[in-house]
Image (cartoon, rainbow, N blue to C red; front, side, top):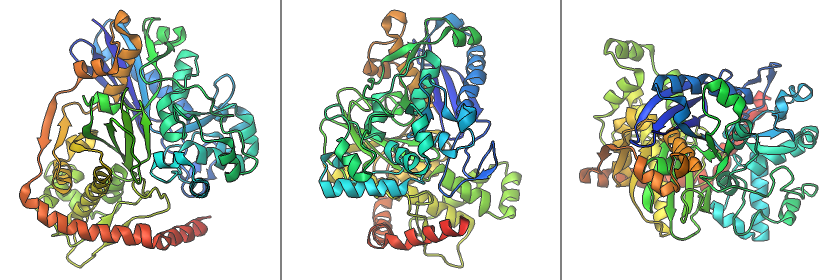
Length: 554
């Protein structure tokens, strides 16, 4: 028998699974919260207030959850620890941190601990939007071809805007760091003693192409004249997905009771690792990884420019295919905001009396509403827009408020808003010739909200498949750990082979209902007009409001 461990580093916690590499069964699951969570208000060592749009984390939290979770999940599985042959991790991206030559996170060095820029910047750190805008504008003026791979816009969530932010605002931190490294690569570095940057994040988050490398130094110098060595903190060597970064260091193996021959896969992105984890191995499926945000992923046999995509990279998701990525920034956290701040206490009391969570209770009330019955449209930009506008300075919009609106009305309009946002992405793909025949939904919300899954099917007019596993990203990470181990150690030699053998069964498929198409098409036409006005014709309205808010908070 042989087993692999998968670790999915999310926004607030890490989820771990033990995967039986013979049966595909998940033998044990552990969830461990980050002790310090997300620092978006203050820097916890000093209490210093952080500016708006900042989001930092403590890198030691990443190691703490491994120390707690891996021994627990191995013990709970009740398997011989020496039969664990692989370990894979995935991470939110672009979550990136300054590191020293020997791999220490810069913020753990006493001299730099009080510098906010020395800490990891979480994916949703959006304070570098001005640099993202500058990078986009320069690429447009220069007619740089690489921009088309990213839908025509650079995101503030990516590697270089965050690096330029440090370069401009805290040059001593920039000079002190040896590497600015993705958190997924940093954790693998700690586990193996080897810095092995993965090609996936380099392609999608750092503008790197296997054929062309990085954009030319002249481009970066045009963005900022004294920033003319883009590879200085990134490096130039990137490793394909599924390759081994090395074996688990003896100090960890001994502490966790594992063999010294556990192969650790190069790091991966939480969304991208989910595609083979969900059993998808060819074009036609749009994989949605639904959590705090949504990543949308698909593969095709050719590269085409799709407006608003956040990247297209050959071999970036599955070997042999061009992998496309898009996304929505506010999903689970938007629902949580609404439930935590906008629902009267009477609803919480009624939910408790009904033996349901407040989410379940709201869904029960919202489910009978017909298309258009809310009289409302929401633009799900509570944390900006990733696709197809690529604008982190956009903010949420609710249109159609009326005195008959109730919490369930508002909640349903938020659910519909994420489905309409996904339809915009689906339309963009299909208008450019990328064929989509189904949606495969992953993540806890896919299991917890049947109403949302049916809305996706009805609004996008595509069947929505939900796999039985609720841990698709962690399962995918374990799959890559098995490939890193290879058949000789009891794993697999190829990603496609492992995906086919280890796919989770289908739990449920939601089919589009024909009677819903016409009414939702009518609402969608209004949605697109509102989308166009606030996001494309007059984005300065929302930009100005956000700027005024920033000034008021500073």
